[in-house]
Length: 385
Image (cartoon, rainbow, N blue to C red; front, side):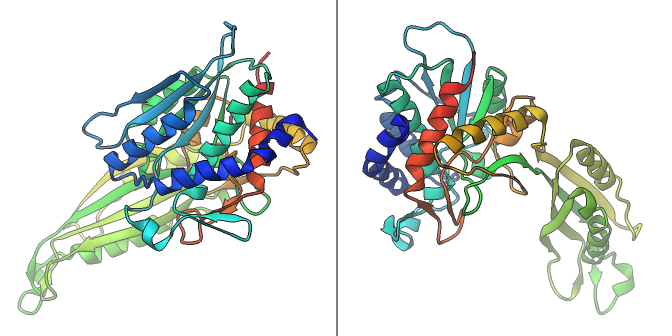
């Protein structure tokens, strides 16, 4: 058996102990103190293999927790370049979720909030690097972990940091969960836009003077139908009006209304086309006024030859470990969208195999953790000249 894989399998109970400790440290994006507490636990777990563990604070305006940067340098080497291992500390689960979803092990699966998305991926990344060093397998490049605090809330404070670190890297390996029971890697993701459509109208008594009013709810309903026509299933552009609000009383013609529209795209050219259409909306009732704000918050992670080459390389390494590796395109986004968009070869989904991200049955498949950690270790060691 491969030496790395053999050692990882031996360490599986230790992996689960680390995962248990990570999951029990709840870290919702919206609670910076909780994220920072978890960050300190992660920093401590990294101390056996790195002396360069640094918290990176975010601007007060974003109100997010600190990000964590962990650097591992090749022993006795001055080789240039780096491999970026990208992940996040935050989860979607609020404090107290553990009372309803405690960490537990059942039928070869480890359950708990954040286990799959993506604390299991951090555990695998740590064991991958630690074992490379312990077994004396040479690193050809510096390895940097960047673990952000706000990925689940669209990365407002960390985007610039992620992009800057990516530009210093020869490749980015994203520790987000894999896809499906086969553990497929993600070689493309949709970009995401969020737009707010606000309508101002004219209030009136709905019984005495209905014709004097200019209904914003009626206007916004008509606009939503128009916006939905911008969807293009052929080019995989999807549009969802997920939130709508307006009005004050049932007997008042509403003078204010607002809708939040999400757009997901595969190609950069679709981003420009759809955004132009949204910003060109005109009122149907000319007594109303439309305002469109917002924009694209994550660029598309498009398929490209560099990522395809990186995947094929990972596939060959996986085969030697008995893993049949597949790839997939997904509608969800990650911080890998940023790194791919700045032109750095990016391979996503190198984290845990499991299911239930953001759901009550969130879990990781325990026996897959050593195998995926070994694959990641081989991939890190093989990158560079």
